[in-house]
Image (cartoon, rainbow, N blue to C red; front, side, top):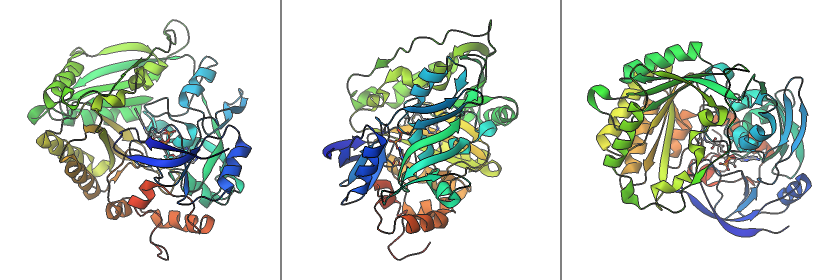
Length: 452
Ligand SMILES: Cc1cc2nc3c(=O)[nH]c(=O)nc-3n(C[C@H](O)[C@H](O)[C@H](O)COP(=O)(O)OP(=O)(O)OC[C@H]3O[C@@H](n4cnc5c(N)ncnc54)[C@H](O)[C@@H]3O)c2cc1C
């Protein structure tokens, strides 16, 4: 197997990297490629659904995991699955939904890999109930930077386990993951949608939903101002019972955005019109519908390459979490900053998170998390810095899976277990073979010889 030069991007297409990449088909080849010498380091790349530079290693080597995508073993008595790290959530649904199993938690796209889910310790619409992906991992097989293959779990090498969950690929390449799927009675979800007229109503609605609903998510109109600031649609959902309530899983139909749209298609006026239509789509009295699982969990996947609608300059996604105590104030300050900047954001996503993850760099904490897309226009980086500063000020943190612009000092303050993370990396990777553009930008490894 050889290394081929190629250009990779994050999903937002603001971060790009020219890398020497290999695409192993089998585990032994992946182990062999990790064991060879790499100038400028090496990093795993799943499906590139992180928005910024987390999966990029410009000028260095990259191991593409997409063909390491076999199911290794499955125990239907308790849902325990072992699969290779390149398996996607889409693959899981194809293989197990008809047999009555769902992933324990899932991001808003089915095209992320299980390796990526571990490395970002992803969360879904059920974080208060189920925690993040790392909470479900029983063990994983990891190719260390040295090329050695080791099994890691909360019992075996717990510090390395904690560094790998949410460790954005910096502990090595994850080969296999063992976790438990969740038994469900049908392939449908019963979804209740309600209009929330303003931010206070939304926060109260989510506070109630996190105690009562299996799944909950809010869609906020990022363009609303004044008394309507923070208005949107709150969705709560439960998996449907078998039989009468269930709907067919539905064919996997997707449209594609064939080309980059010119930047002027998305302007504050067109975004405003879209957001208003989205709000009014749900009747004032609310509605309840039964939907196929895919339609509820992955609405954006219905349009392949939807990231092209932002044109060639790409877009940023910002996501941060703010602890419960400061959340109402923090969300208001962020939404006001966005509205004042007229930065033009499509629907923002507001969710609750239930608590800390198991990883040193896990993103979740008990609080409220807001995620929004911004077309890359002049000045938008200033707005992103402002949003990060508000989050930090309220005791929160920015999500690395979405980030492309955070500065190293803010990152250091947001992730208090960075010192423990660095200590693990120093012990398993003293030569700093694992590298990424994000790690360099955020000085994640620390300066050589430093201790955090
Ligand atoms: C539309 C959309 C919706 C999303 N919704 C959510 C959401 O609701 N919740 C959420 O938490 N996230 C969400 N995300 C983010 C996404 O789930 C994460 O970025 C995820 O990590 C992407 O997986 P990937 O396979 O594409 O990984 P990549 O983006 O390719 O890589 C992500 C990181 O994982 C590392 N990595 C990948 N594979 C391996 C491996 N085998 N071994 C070691 N390291 C590895 C990479 O080095 C990199 O640091 C969303 C993304 C999109 C595009």
